[in-house]
Image (cartoon, rainbow, N blue to C red; front, side, top):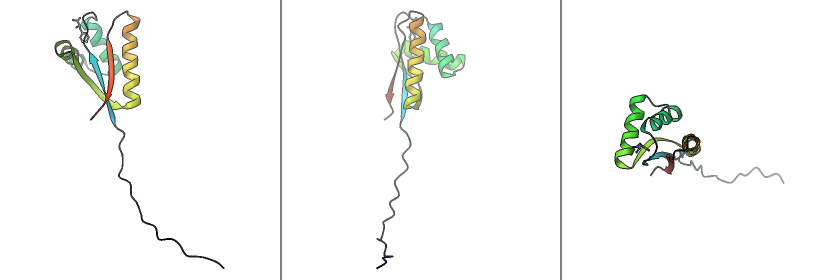
Length: 101
Ligand code: NFA
């Protein structure tokens, strides 16, 4: 006996999920030269001199500054690369990441 009956199916359309973004955060310290921070921001985060200087000064004065937001993997890679660049020069400069609300 052939059976061509088909179960009724409910078409479930999942809401589109955009990947959550993560913030890259620059932390102030007392030892890393300002100009080096600016150089790292320009090199790793493709900022202009003016943007990089503004971000550096915000972290310097307030303790932290959000540098940029990216998908998780990109944020983590950039934070690690920027932190490593400072370690190679013997500076304690630190970039961290955290998920955006
Ligand atoms: N506070 C550092 C200084 O006075 C500069 C700095 C800014 C370091 C932002 C880290 C982050 N040399």
